[in-house]
Every structure is written in structure tokens, then in C-alpha cells.
Image (cartoon, rainbow, N blue to C red; front, side, top):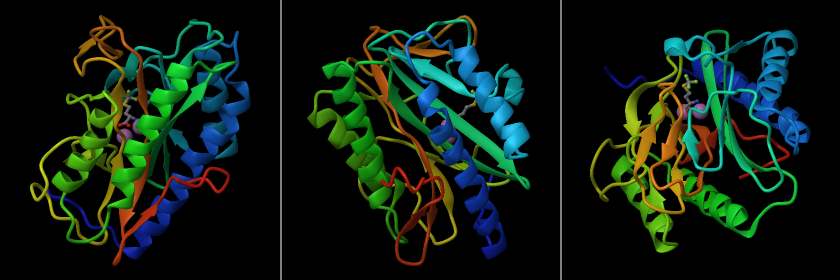
Length: 255
Ligand code: MF3
Ligand code: CO
Ligand code: CO
């Protein structure tokens, strides 16, 4: 499938969708406390997206996914399904929000600390955040996806953490997951050369232990094989004439 370059009109719609996704993360933060279930977080987000934003939660029924958001706790890497699981003090959770507005997608996720945070949780979340940030700040025409993947991988590994290989960032627009695949590891000077008008996510998954993952029997939840802690942050980004624009940035939480 070809890589789509977005027109000015499409970019305007991507900005709207991106901002809505960011707003959901901002809205849900005060609810992420010990004692809440991930099902409760899912319902609050679902109702906010549908009733307040008049948008569509993209995960719901996407390839059979049963809920409106992804909630990945502790050693869960990504695509955790909201459930009756109760969050407890010291947990770390990634909440991943994708909304569709006027046919366009905005996709963003971040880590939250539940109750009093742990040193390990804060450390890993910070490393994953910095991986995302380093990648985003490299975006401009002429840079390759290999340049970006290599920088992200180098940062994680320099802190004795590992990058998950099986899941990656992606082009995004009218389609949730479109080309290109955005690997969070790689070799400088290889892969796609960025051009203005491309829109894609950067969403590194960083493990405290080894990089290997396994899929649970629910066919969605990805966990670390060694049960080590995992963290992820995600933004949807636009390549501009001279750099980048983060389409899912929230003014309260600048990069
Ligand atoms: N939001 C995820 C991503 O960053 C994809 C979730 S697909 C779902 O690409 F079906 F699990 F929701
Ligand atoms: Co994504
Ligand atoms: Co996402």
C-alpha cells in the first residue's frame, strides 16, 4: 500500500482528531487512582468520546477488539483489554486512545502512575518518554525511518532496557494503521525517506528486561515473556516543510 501525503484540508481534520484524542487522556487522568477498574476507565472514555466529543472510539470492534480503549498494566506491553481488573497503588498503566472524527484518526497514549509511584515505574516511564521524544524531535524531510529507529533503540539500550520488535508505529489518516511501519529500532540511513505531508505515530514499547513478548489467550493482550515491567508513550505526528507538528499534543502536557 502506498504512503499517503495529506492535503491541507486533511491535515486540518487530523489536527482536530488528534486534539480530541489528547483531550481524552487529559480528561481521564484524575480517574486513574487505586481501586478503579480498567472497565470503569473504558466506560468513562467511551461516553466522553461518543457523547461529548461526538466522535468514534476507533478500537471498539476494530478487528474484533471488544472495548473502546487499551489499558496495559505493569508487564502488559500493549493492547490490554479493559476488564474488572482493579488498579492498585504502585501500578503503572498505559492508556491508549484513538478517536475518529470526520473520518480521520488521532492516536495517542501515555503512562500514568497509580497512587504513590515506584522508583522503577517512574524510571522506565521516563526512559520510554525520552525514546518517543528523541524520535519525534528528529522528524523532518530527508531523515529516514532508520535514523529515527536507531536513535530510539540506542537510548533505550543505553539504559539497559530493550525495545519491543513485534509492534511498531504506523502511518495514520483515514485508515487507523496504514503504511509506513515505523520501527523503533534500526540502522541509520535505511528505510523510508520522510516527506512533508506524511502522518505517522511514534510509540516505542520499552521493557525493563528482555525484549521478548508473548500474546495472551485473549488474542490481544501482549505481555513481556520475562514478566518485566513495560512502558509506552505515543503521539501522532505530521512531517512539515522544515520539521514536525505533533497532532496529539495537549497544551497542558507539551513535549
Ligand atoms: N492504538 C493502538 C496503536 O497505537 C492500536 C490499538 S488496536 C486495538 O496502534 F484494537 F487494540 F484497539
Ligand atoms: Co498507534
Ligand atoms: Co495507540
